[in-house]
Image (cartoon, rainbow over all chains, first blue to last red; front, side, top):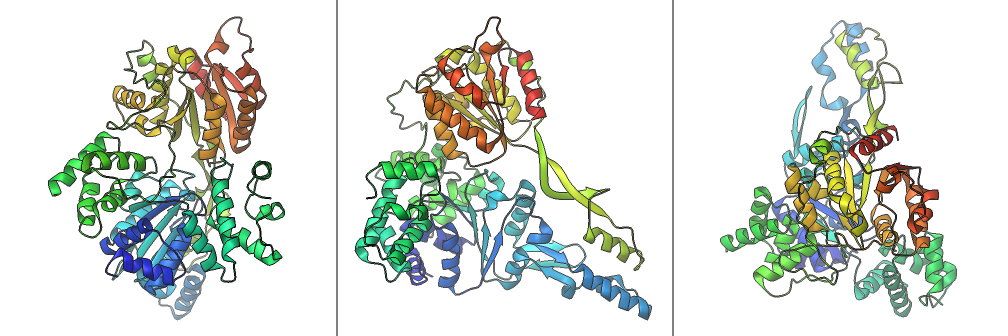
Length: 276
Length: 324
């Protein structure tokens, strides 16, 4: 990839319509070998950008979903204890207990971070990092800055080429600045009207242009309504799908459940003139 | 060009962005690959709050319009040295010495607690296969007593909402100092409430209390203005997505907006929070009756109402928080 425009075309081909900022951010992440830290409202396409990058670059995608309490044995590596025990029994019967033979690659279970280092070039998606805790951030930082892990009993595993790492956050918690400093930071916004229409039509091939525009317009207006949970692109896609399935030609109130997930929000929208 | 870029980063630092040397270096490297605006925005910003500041400084420093597609990131308040035009009375109050300051600085707050999902070594609990097998390998395959692990204890998130309107003016300095002390003892989120909601968490992270308070003072545009508690809480509810926090609201309950809105938003806040405590400076005074409209609206939706007018009252509040 020689320019942000070229990468944008690649992403386009992978079914993701990026704006200039997204393409520039991803291009720079590739060029500088830095992780890309994506923040934005839910449904602005953070995760799907990582999926599309893997497709556009034709490399595997390795995904790590974060949650509270996630630790090294779930994210990085673990030893295969049952197999080690079996092996130990075999050694015992032969009377040759050799501890070193228990800590070899075949007893090592690679979790997503280690998989990414071993399989690079690849795209590593660390999804919803804000759900993990500080302890996890600390060791993630170590892996990302070194592109290597050192396993005490085994040795170091280093990536030949650094994986393209994409971290996403919904900002339920502020991620430590030390981690952000290692990354390029990009804030994703809701797409413009035209882009959203294009995204709808790209993702749902049979969708009528007029209906797509109406859905995008209505969703755009909803985002300005100060709702509890403003709909993202994922919601407009769901809505368009629902309308398509029912053979509707206009967005209507009966299908609002696809876009709005709070009763208060639905009341608000029904009270407005957005849907008929 | 490099010099101009470095100058740009120092102006950004003045506007409150945290661009240390490593970020500046990344910025300079990035300019070799993409245009100046994006090179800076991707490497020097770290928070949506940074973006409008970055744009304003970019405009002032390099001239022209930032080629940013659209600006939908709305901020409750921002202060940039270059562009500060707001209809409201932006009072950049110089925070003067407060008598209680040394006493407040001596408080030693302890965080509220909750069960963590992270497993730690323990004498009882679930079997820790990793440690058990390790023990077996160490003894050459002898059966080992099972080792255990269980969930630990973690600091529960604390949120301080501080009313800095005119009627709370005699307390706001002391309360911000109080918030500063807390901010250096546990993870905390601090916002001030007036006619707007302002996030001062980052300003209070500065270790020196005087500098932290000055920074916070500069960030708050509506010092000693009116109060629109309901509106401010609604904004807070929209932004705050973390469940299970302990929320402390410092306010006297003088509300200029509609009490119905205040009640709705307090109820909503309580639904997502572990505990909501209201610290009211007047509540500690003799003959106090909760009659203000705001107070009446809020009372059904708080777990506890405590005083907040003296250092002693603040100590009591800290105990309440610790117990939460």
